[in-house]
Image (cartoon, rainbow, N blue to C red; front, side, top):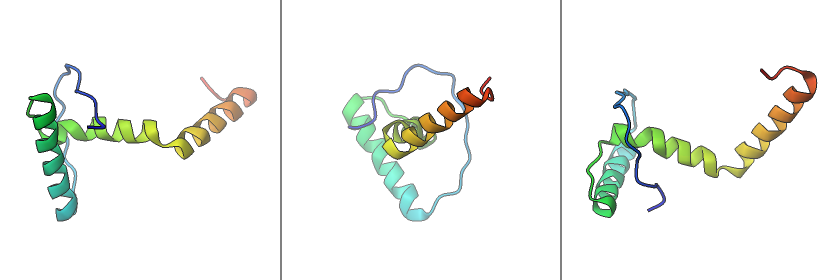
Length: 79
């Protein structure tokens, strides 16, 4: 299981439109999550954490973001 157990949180409702195949894969992933951790979570609760984990693991994105922040720090644009 690549996704860590979700932390306690205030529920947030999200509405998105998905292709049927992706929706099925997400439902299957939610079942896998429940089997792994013993907690049933709705797909809508897992998606934000899945996206966060995806972005954290994307080396190209992190390199680009680091470069962007470095450029903005030198130009004084970063808050």
